[in-house]
Image 1 (tube, rainbow, N blue to C red):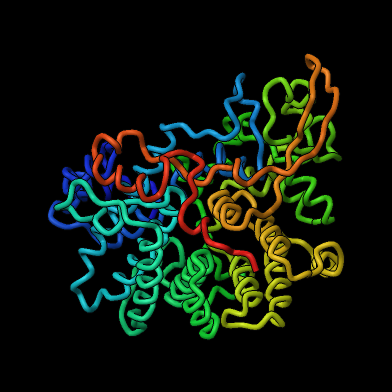
Image 2: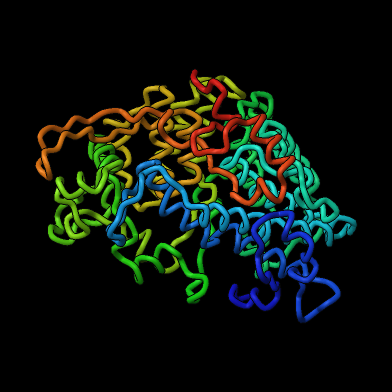
Length: 498
């Protein structure tokens, strides 16, 4: 099934700006014109996977904001002006909020309604539950307290904002119940409809368990981590990773490729911090992650983060003498979007072992080595280089800083997850230049550590929520804190140190 044809199967229609304002016309919005009385679950499933795995608003927020905040990338030279480094436009906030709630979740809910009461569709219902959790997990990690328990109830136009702690508790339960309900004797979605795992229920179970481990580690849920570690039924190799592969069609191809092909100078340069970190570790992934500069094809140079316009001019940086992201990321039309990788699972297991949650610290080094190896192999690094790396500067030392730094390297350009892990742990230790200028002449520079308190902690809500859902919006702000970039989400307030 070609993804572009889904547009004719699921008429998403005009997307309004809030949950409350879009829900009234959902029956019209979510209608299959070829079957006006009922939507085919196969089409719905393909659509929600496509939107959740590769939606364009997610890409632009990742490229323009999250990947820069977490120092994978730096500012592009596609614009003549440079806005403040830590900022986020309401256009992007609303676009992402709408995409999550109206494109993905309302269609996911329709799929749940269609399959809930059919015993033969128990697997379809379970997979829809898993995808619903995956979507809500991304929403609450960005905004904190959000509409959840009432969000998809068509009879409630102004849903409450649930506390993130309660959302996490329910998501963990949902994943456990969904996995337990899967029946291998019953049918699931067809290989064509399931564009993520092509009808392989084993992979869906492992994905759900791995996602549950991610959520349990993030929320400090020792009992569920221990349960999962004892069962040990996770993604277990790179072939089982949850990778969303983009097709080659013009409408659906890899957005990094699309952007690089059409707006090369606006794609953004790689971060100097990232380049230096990999150089310090003698990391063989560096030439995979970054291209040589245009003016010197033997050199990779990153663009420093947190510079203003005057400092960029003083440094003499431009798009010719700094590096773009690696060709395997931006020049491959079919390059996948990694939703949850085997390497990440290994690093999650490492953390569980170091905390003695369902494993012992003695097992942590093997899990860590497996995680580094998985990332290296995914990027086609030869085995000899992997062995040398793990015996050298990246040799296991049992610290949370090393673990999260290696996870950050493996998550390259996955700003959503890397941003979450930084807010949770304050690692890797980000750095910036403190500069003294005389005009455009550099008088002095000092490399300083970025204070984690100065890095955003969440996204502000869409600015029309106070009007459309004022009572519940105000209650959420009262509980969570000011509706700005720097208020922390619940799990970021927990103590995650060893």
